[in-house]
Amino acid sequence: MVLSLSSQNVIQYLQDAGLCSSEDGASKESELPDRSKNFNLLVNLVDNRKLLVKQERSNHHDGTPHEFFNEWLFHQLLQQFPVIGNISAIASLVLHFDEENSILVRNYLSDYQELRNFYQKTDIFADDIASAIGTTLAGLHRATFNGREYRDFMATAPAGQFRYHFYNPAQGIESIAPEIFGMVPTEALQFYTLYQRYESLESAIADLAYEWNPCCLTHNDLKLNNILVHSRWQQLDNCLVRLIDWKACAWGDPAFDLGTLLASYLEIWLSSLVVDSTLELEESLRLAVIPLEVLQPSILALTRSYLNAFPMILDYRHDFILRVIQFAGLALIYQIQDKIKCRKDFDNADMCMLQVAKNLLTMPEQGVQTVFGITQPEILKPVAKVHKLPQPEREKQLVRLYYEKTRLRGC
Image 1 (cartoon, helix red, strand yellow):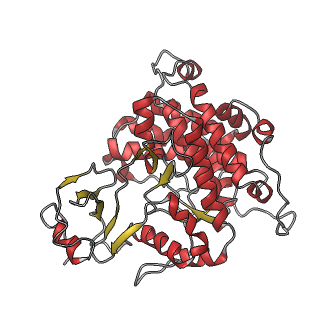
Image 2: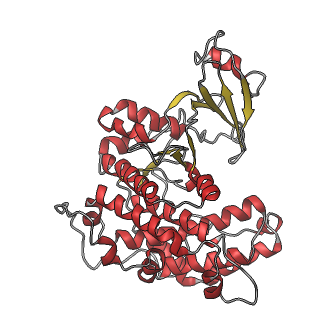
C-alpha cells in the first residue's frame, strides 16, 4: 500500500528515513503551492535546516514511471562521475528518493527565490543574472558533451521497465480526437484549428524533429520558475543561480534548453501585451507594458555568455542560433497548450503568442532580429573562437523519409 504523506506523518517518515532524529523535531510544516499536481511540504527543523518533501500524487496506480526517477538519476550521475561533480554547485541535490512511494526529499534553498517571481516583483532584468544563467547552462552541456558514458547512464530505466530511446521534444501538438470537445472550451478549439491550418508551421516542426541531435545532458524544462537566483546576487561572484526540478532531464539537444529559456523571457513580453480586437498584432506588440527592448539585453547577455562558455557548439552545429530561435517558437506553442489544459482558456493574447511562435518557427532568420534586436553575425562577433570539432561524414543526395507537409502529431 502506498504511503500518503501529510503534515501529520511527515516527521515520522523523515525520522524513519534517517533524515532527522527525534531530537531534531520540527518548528512547523507548510504546504507549498501545487504547481505540478504533486504534494509539496516544506519542513522547518529546529536546527534551522529546511527540507522540501515532494510526493507524486497522480501515477501511483497506472503503471507509469515515477516522474521523480529522472531527478534521482541525475543525482546518481553526479555521484557516479565525480569529474562532472562541479555541476552539483548549480543544482539542489537530492537527499532521499523513495521509489515505492514516489517521495523525493531535498534541501530547501532559503537564500534563493524563483527567478520569475524575482522579475515580477522587481522589474530588474540585470545582465549579470542572465550571464550567470548562460554560463551555468553551458557548463552542464559542455561537461557532458558527446560523453557516451553519461548518455548510457541516463538511459537507465526504473525497475521493471524499459527505455528504448530518449524522447524527442520536437513533436508538435498531439493528434486531435473527438474527446477534446469535452476537455477544452469552445474558444480554445480555435488554437487547434489555427495550428492545423498553418501547414508551414507543421513542416517547420517536422524539420526540427528530423534534425534533432541529442549530444549532451539537457534539463528539458528550463523555464524561469525552474531557475533560482540568490537573494544577495549583487554581492556574489558565483553561485548566483541554481537549476531545480530535474525530473525531465535526459540526453538531448542543447538548442532545446536554450530555446525554452529564451521563450520564457519572450513570455514576459507577450503576457504584457495590450490586446484588443481593434488592434493589429504589430500595434499590440509595440504597446506592451514590458517592451521587448527591455528584455533584449538580458537575452543577448544570456546567449553570449552561453556561447563563450561553450563555443564548440557553433562548430558542431553551424545553424545552432537558428535552431534555438525555432525551439523558442515551439516552446511558446507548448506554453499555450499547457494554459489551455490547466486554465481551460485561450484569448487574444494567446492568439498573438501563437503568431509570434509561428514566425519564429517558419522564419528563424527574421526571428533572430526580432528576439535579439541585432543580426546573427553581430551576436557571434564577440564569441571566443575554438578549433573545429571533427564532423561525421554525411551522405549526399539523401531523400528524406517524409513529405514537407507531414504531421508529427501523435508520434
